[in-house]
Amino acid sequence: MSREPRAVRSTCLITDIEGFRTRDAATQREMQRRLVTMTEWGLRKGGIRRYQARYQDRGDGQLVILPAGIDEFTVVPTFILSLRDALADSNREGSIGRMRVRLALAQGVVQDGYLGVVSRAVVVASTIVDADALRRLLTASRHSDLAVALTDDIYTDVVVPKPTPLSDRAFTAVSIPAKNNERIGVHIQALHTVDAKPAGRASFDPTVAGFALAGIGLPGLLPIADQMVHEHDYFGPDEDSHVDSAWHPEDTHALAEHDDGDEPDDDQGWP
Image (cartoon, rainbow, N blue to C red; front, side, top):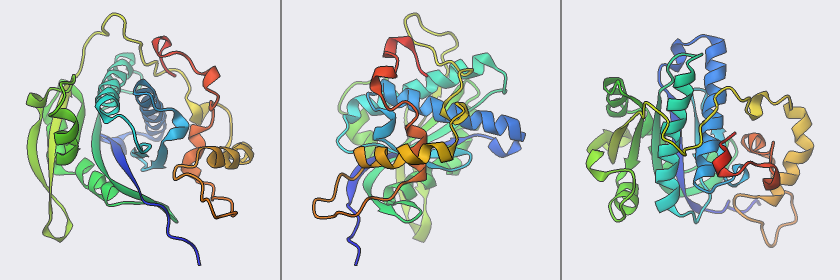
């Protein structure tokens, strides 16, 4: 009989591209590539390497499970502001039109499942990112490329106690309807797009091919994927188990440059 998967408390974030279904196939593919690269760029700004997080595709967005034990005072605001800046840089380049994103963050216990992760926090984040309140906020905020929603506990724990670039006065408290007549308390904000890149900030280059277009196909990654999953198992090794852990397809895009020595310094930009 298989053991119950480990339960690890983590922060979950979900992104969703506005109006994705109305774009043609080539634009959709390019938007997906840029969002993946923006996400990894923003996480690295917060000190998280690609292989440390878990990723799951949503078609018009992405689910990311952050590693346990992170410094949320640093990671959360840094990632949000980096994603805002990356969207601004991408939209200044302009080849695919304006790209706008909704972002939701929740936290809770996460376990491995057969089709991905199992977590109430993921369900909550999925509900929030698709909520009418967040959609309307981004639609109405024509000077913003990013609308973010934080669950009340993340807002209270991360934004309120310590001054960060995410001003607590800019958030609005709302109640999101969920299943079984439940309500989810969240704080939402549309981040104003910075029109010009501030001096000293590394730019996000949307024209640089990310992992998905790097010429490495999935079959070629299978031999190294299993090794990397063992080296960086999200839930850690099972002390009394000698059965190899399963390979997760969502982990493979985090493997292209797993040698930190090959990665650029933060001040050199990313990717």
